[in-house]
Length: 168
Image (cartoon, rainbow, N blue to C red; front, side, top):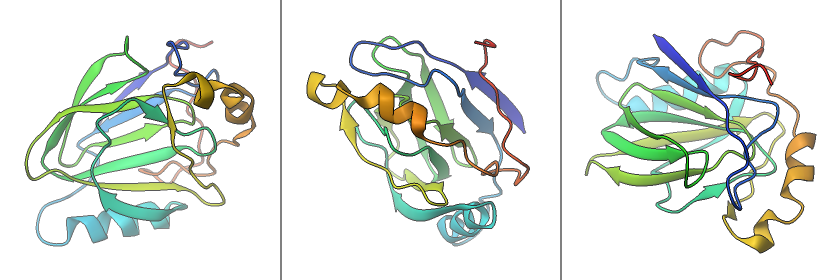
């Protein structure tokens, strides 16, 4: 498994997260065989991440100010921009997991026809949906800093200790 960490400064109406890094775990999940989505849901739940859903990734800039989010790619691939309109474009493929701290923008730019994504949130956190608008941006930074870090890493199950990529 290869792990990439990135941190982002605010980008327009995307606040990003001042304390936690975005993490991409390449090839983290065994998705071979049937029922990949259900196996991912069980894996995340075992590590304290619940309220799971199966769908895709929204094709517009958005973020969550009240919860961290984990996305597990069960099938297919997607090109996703993280961190706002000036952020990097990352291709995620089946078996990859991305941990998106509260406030970090994300937007699907392209996808394969078979894309299937499992999303989940840390125990006790409920996600809102905010777009890159002035109205949604107002007060978001104050909410984001109040979101506690997750108790466990969604992939490894170890105590959550990810620090910002740049050491900010």
